[in-house]
Amino acid sequence: MTSTQPLAAATDGADATDTADTADTVGIAAAAVPAPPRWAVRAAQVAALTALPAGLWRLALVAGLHGGYTDAGYRAMGFTGWGAVWPVFLSLSTEALALLTLGLVRPWGTVPPRWVPFVGGRPVDPRAVVLAASLGAAALALLWTPFVAWWALPGTDMTPRGHVLVGFLYLPAVAWAPLLAAVTVSYHRRHRAAAALPRVA
Image (cartoon, rainbow, N blue to C red):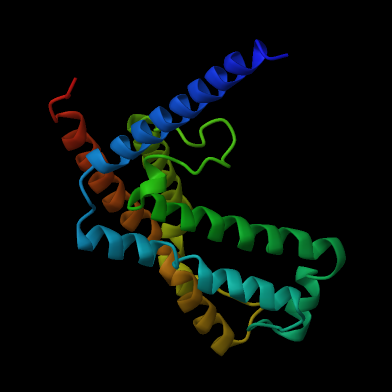
């Protein structure tokens, strides 16, 4: 019994040392990346809100508000029962994706929190982040840019005033792609600068 106690203590000490080394590595990885410029922080914050107006509008439709639709148009859209699932999912998922833009200007975009599966607590590959964000910006440009022409669409199932107002609710989402692209460029430059720093043995 006694002979195993030093071994256990040594093991505990090794685990503590490993944990400390990991924490130091994570801290160094995050600290080595230059702070984002103020414009990038502001752009990320705005990007995180671009999907919110349209998302709140869709949730209002599910809650029973007509949101610019005529009575017949609202009934035809079928926002009740299972018909409510898609608007809710779309609203929540788009806002969650928009909030991920903040990771490009926050430390957790370099070292995810430990509770994140598979990658938590370890520095991420900046190239993978830049690739994912770049593809996301391209997809968003294809998805949302056509909404610039919203007012050219007939909108026969909406009231004239509702059609105009809904166009303005979707208009912020058009800015999501260019904002994300700009913040991605900043993220890439900061991590490239960190990679160019001399390594201390």
